[in-house]
Image (cartoon, one colour):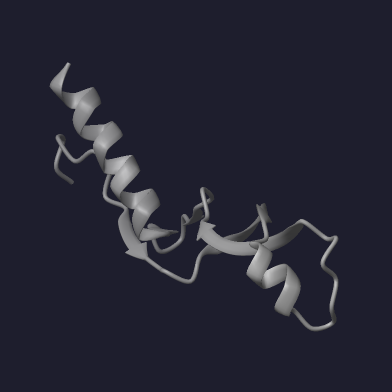
Length: 86
């Protein structure tokens, strides 16, 4: 094992399917309010559900693997590089 290895021999597996839902309230345009079916012109907002990268990761100690979203891996690697530069 290399002493300078920041992940201590663990292999990182990127899985883009690791997302979680996030609800946002968005105002509806007048066009959308007037032309929607069923017709509800007084309802000014709607809820939109987006999929955002999960901040969780999974560790398997038997196989020495870490599974995380690619955005989370980039964030972890930035934090490791920042820590090693100090």
